[in-house]
Length: 491
Ligand code: SER
Image (cartoon, rainbow, N blue to C red; front, top):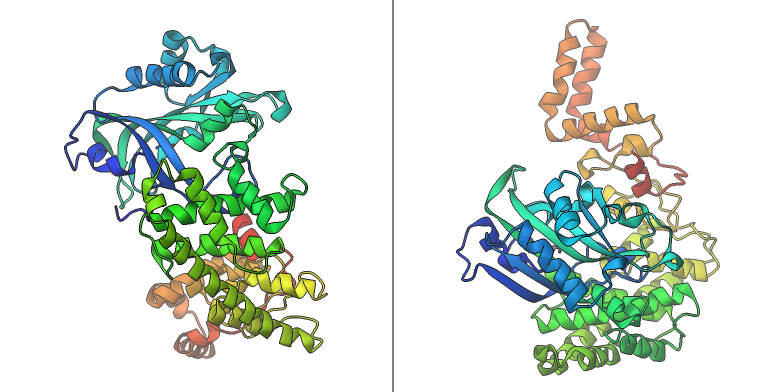
């Protein structure tokens, strides 16, 4: 499936059946599917429930049973098979879905007060394209100790935890933005094993389940830190645990580190884990012990993992070694720079480290801070091109920045330079059009052409002939106290 790099949901292998491209060999299915998601990679480790690699459990109907079949199945699974007390469960349905609400209330007997309607949150889609439809979710209430009351719609996110999702697949979204009904309404349900396990094992988080405890144990032993003693350390330990599962699984499924596509994602995962270990005081390689532990925990359920144990250790270990070398080279260059007694790290040095040596910008900031430079003084010098500017601008610690920009990079310079929003927007839109289709951008000028003085006409001809120069005139963004991303988002 070219629309995704990885299997991100249990339904992915069944997509041809949903959209009618292939005839399913069976009208229904259940599965345990290895999945990998990086959409929320930035919050991994900071919550107690997100992970990158997970095992998705699910049942599916390819034009066979629909809502009246799927809802009783889900309830039976959760309350009878898994044995979770129905009185602790809440249900959400899509705001338009009267039928699902009626089934939950009248057929299953869920009290009306524990059924809530949501908009966007109860519409599931695979991505920008592919099968989609309204969904209905089952949540467990962990109790008042975990956050505010109010049910899944408005209560605490660590209190009401989604443990099963039912998607009523009815539409297919195409690349051109149109949505068509599926040949037959279908069912896609599921939840990560890692989400359900804490409930069944009576523990607080996925990190306290027997899938993760051995990994946290080895991460603690590698780093010498104690889990639960310091939140910042805990995030690092959780990332080491999560990412080591992911790297082992990806390699056992045939992904190799590289600079693009899946391989790049694997590279990032390995590097993030190694970086975290380093932040927690580890100087040498550490992935081998992590991978060994993953194989110990998951090897019996995933024989490919056990069979390829050596290969995984080698592939991950080589990547780790390379990255440790990068870290060593970058650190040497940076230390030389800092030894000059400089008050700031020049932007071109930071960019060269990032671009030529693959040395992460946040590490440059961190080392600068450790060397006693005041936080946030990674000063990006004037005259950097947009590529360097963009690579550096969106990093915590990079506050004082100015770079040459052009609309071709998509930077809302007008906004970032502090023009008022409407004016900034106009400026950016105009420059963008000018960049892509100068003739259209020149139309408004032609309209006023005939009322202009000769000098103005000459000035306009001059400007249009030299427009790239004009656009590339350095635009200084001084003392922007918000990061570029914040500015762009606010805008
Ligand atoms: N596809 C839905 C999900 O990933 C239900 O399985 O949540």
